Picture 1 (cartoon, protein in one colour):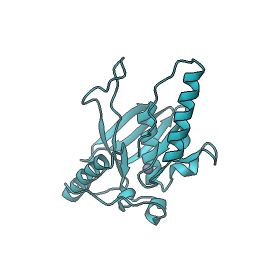
Picture 2: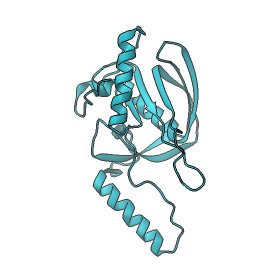
Picture 3: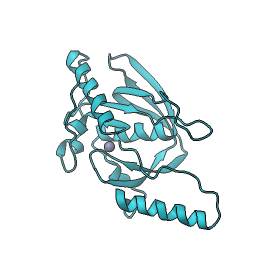
Picture 4: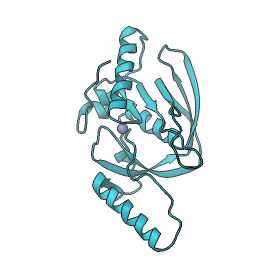
Length: 198
Ligand code: ZN
């Protein structure tokens, strides 16, 4: 497998609506395998084809590992999805704010409101129809990646212009919040201080 070059802002390909995939041939299979490899090397949880310079309706997603009741990561609990020509056919009225990063906007994170749950129709890597019901973090990743296929980036959807930080500022802010909570004697909820990249 080959690691592909990830394109970053302000590359125009990130702002184009991607073309539908029509051929599920050997070249597509190679491209998909290379995208999976590239996502993993970059420690990402999702990668859309425009992010490697291919204006195609295609994305790969690998969910975060699940945790057991002690907060320990459960091995092999990540789930890999390949979605081709995807569309969101339903989204919950319930929305949730969360912090997102993007491999095409390295060094920054921002707060974005997303539907808590979505239903997606797509094709798999062989062209077979897929129907997916997703919620929580997984639903957020799908919304982020499908936005990429329409030329939309998370920075277009910030909850507030100010809710956009460098990794370092965000890390320091979270640390300060955790320390403050600890001083107040509140039970500190353990949250990851580094956010996954999509
Ligand atoms: Zn992204």
